[in-house]
Amino acid sequence: MTSPTCPKCNSSMEEGFIVDATHGGRVQSQWAEGKPQRSIWTGLKLARDAGHPVTTYRCESCGYLESYAQPS
Image (cartoon, rainbow, N blue to C red; front, side, top):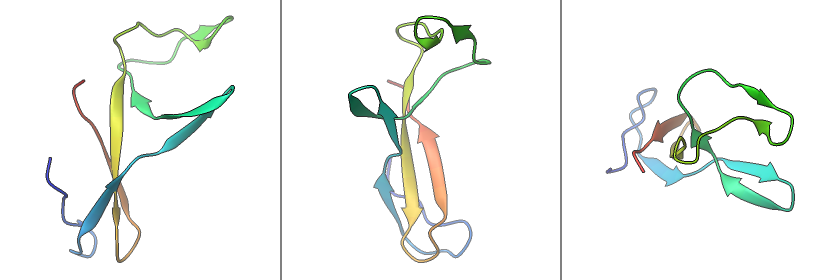
C-alpha cells in the first residue's frame, strides 16, 4: 500500500505501527473480527490465525492517525 494523503489537511503521511506492551515484550497491534471474549488463561480468546497486523499512518503536519488491517 502506498502512503495515503491526510484526509484532514492534505499533507503526506508516514507509515508506522502502534506498540502493544505484553508480559516480557512488545508487539505490533493486531485486528481480530468479532467481539472480544474473555479467557481466564490468556485474557482474551483468539483463534491462531484470527489476527491481522495493523499498520498506522501518521500525518507529518497535523498528527492525524489512520490505521489499516492488512490481510496476513
